[in-house]
Image (cartoon, rainbow, N blue to C red):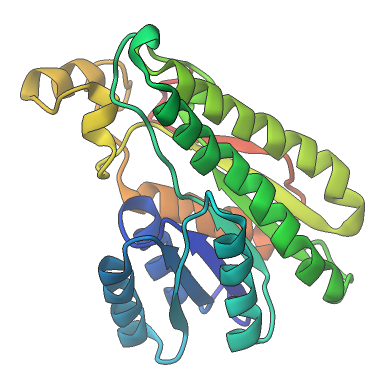
Length: 257
């Protein structure tokens, strides 16, 4: 029950890393807002959480590239649960692995809107709620950004995705410095590619050969699993990590060493 009494908003929570974080946060005692553009899958995750802890989850439709949707999901948390303690910026988008000069402007814009501008919108929406809460203690509010090893050790064919995750990491560090005096922590996780709906795009095509080649770059020899990311996330947003801010934790099986 490391998150008992806290309310967390998790974007991209209808599948993959986000869905597993929502489940684990709920098991740790948190109220959870499952925010996503896929209402069917999102409500299914809410039903699962309700089986863990009745009354502890709601769904909020949110396209994180739109300010009104981001404002709405934060307000939904405050209205339903009375407070907001944690924001997880997990929703992400990538172009298919391809040469840099073949990525369309439309895809470029979508990548930066979903991966970077969403963090801007999220911070602006959640900070007033953090600031209205008791300032005592180091966890007045926590923002967790799900960045990527792509921002640390980039791969060819994913230039603009790599750049968007580098921006996310830079924002995490800068926000950690700026907001520390207000007892607001900002941290990040850099996952290696995992078993999520984006995996095929990262690799260009999902074949046994592509999978074997990628796994060969990971010292521990496998893709990340949603449970790997959720376990790290619970620690980073909990009071156990009260002296960590600006930290960007690689959960990567050693790939970035």
